[in-house]
Length: 255
Image 1 (cartoon, rainbow, N blue to C red):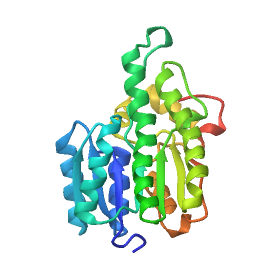
Image 2 (cartoon, rainbow, N blue to C red; image 1 turned 90 degrees about the horizontal axis):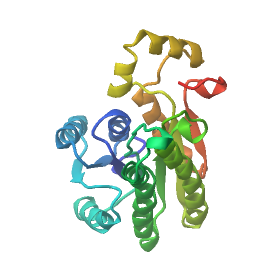
Image 3 (cartoon, rainbow, N blue to C red; image 1 turned 135 degrees about the horizontal axis):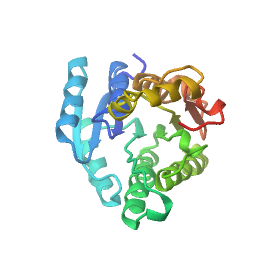
Image 4 (cartoon, rainbow, N blue to C red; image 1 turned 135 degrees about the vertical axis):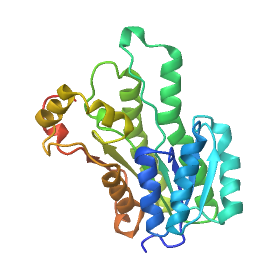
């Protein structure tokens, strides 16, 4: 197993891409800390799936955009597992809103969850690693909207562009401590939300027209890329954005 007896934190692991990442890392031998905010049932379901694999799962309720949660989160993890090996900053929110209708509430909530959380979550874990002289891996889950976005995504696109820059800065500053920081940016992935979109014939046609590989991606495919970065095969990669979009950015359309 590539991650035997390691401990991975995955934020937003109650469903979708986050759950797929948690399960993939568990299958490779890691125990998982699931950080969730609102949906306890989903988080517990993910935890049970991890336990069915034969690994341990710790469910922790927190608003990742609140910087005050991190000291206690680190203490709880260390008290339960004694170690932390990787952090996947996956939690995110997606609230479309036209520019002229953007509110401070939507802006702040999006930036807090999608960007601020990655900064202070990574800071907390990295401080522990530096203190105990341990290397570690951080993966930020970005989006192709950091490269090319569409109307109504003022807050979301801004958060992902910021995350791209933050990834590079964190990678530069943490490299002397042998801490790798990278970003995985998915395109259109088949989650519960996008599967509903795909029931629309017009949306199906857009997939056919605008994605080179002619389909949505699967959460497991994103998880495979995250696994590559957090295991030994990714030891010489840092400060990089890896895009997994089926060729969506090859075309001049937006989906």
